[in-house]
Length: 77
Image (tube, rainbow, N blue to C red; front, side, top):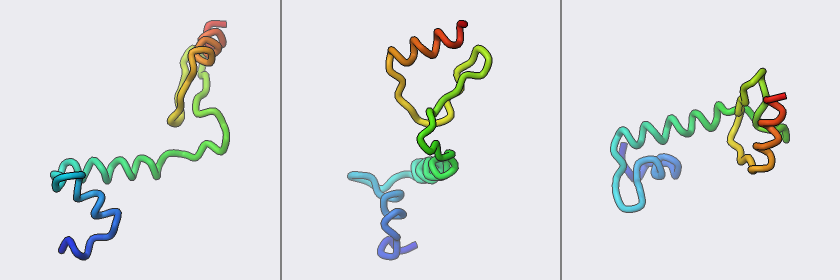
């Protein structure tokens, strides 16, 4: 494809800050976009749940030390 006909998202895929990305890098970008689109929406719910004695993380999240301690206490009880 001619570079002048690339869409903005295609141009971000093909060109890095100072170089043309390799085909493997471009494939990785495509896979990342697919994974982000496939991730379920959380709708304000916590992005994790406790299943038995296991913490299952269902989406991107940050867990504070205090929350982690609480989660561990819930798992151990």
